[in-house]
Image 1 (cartoon, rainbow, N blue to C red):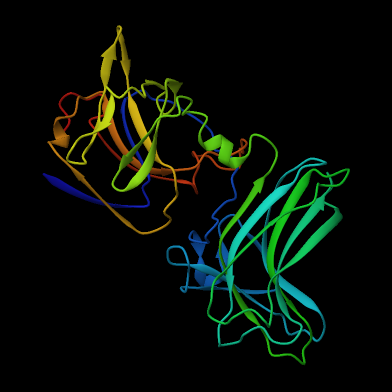
Image 2: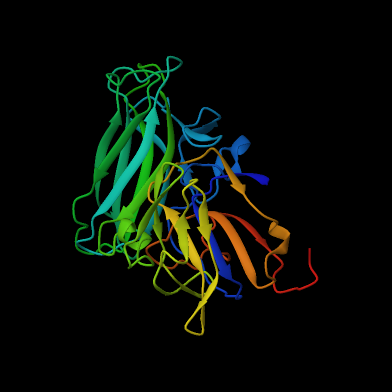
Length: 325
């Protein structure tokens, strides 16, 4: 028996190996501020303005964004922002973890804000919505899970911009430090982000494994690979001892792969998987994959590799090389 310790994994897949090239999808980049030069307060995918920083006090993984109220003598804002393609009438869902601490808390009329800006083809501001995510009445040292759905985007909108920031009321107030982590910014137009996750699971079959519910992929022809996937109980099952069995099998002259995906995202942490048997004896055209994944709503050519902020893989295979070990 071999124990394999890995991180951030919520999907098991056993499939035939077929090379396939694909472009990246546009999902909010680096949503938990893990990638970038924290010393320079520059996070990949994010733009910044005003007074900003970083923190190792995070709700997800090891980093969070710190935003500091600019002490410039009047009402001013600091923050981080990203934007997505949008269209008139489109609504957007925002979620974010936000908190302040006993050191430099929010005082007076200063506040943590989440803004949604609507911009035209020339990047000119059409209109915006501003929401208070935390203020002086917000409990100290308690993470708030802020969520809001925007109003429909106004006429002329081609971009929707999400901003997380601090509004400093005046230089007479102590400077506020606010922390943000795990930002999401999803269009509510169909197909929604939630709908996109389960297009590859039309059979609707689920199974219980490890005390949690898993969806079984297929039936049908889907990526990765792409491959034929079977959701048959003869292809994937949990035995009386609670062990998950996944197979590659030939049904009716065609080879079928299998995949199960956890219904609920667990977030960052350590995941331990125990496998039975010798993984080095997998067929040279087979891949055992354990990975984190999230489908995105649209294509984005800004990145040159697939889904960079929403996929982490452990893949065990000989990659079609019979003599590889």
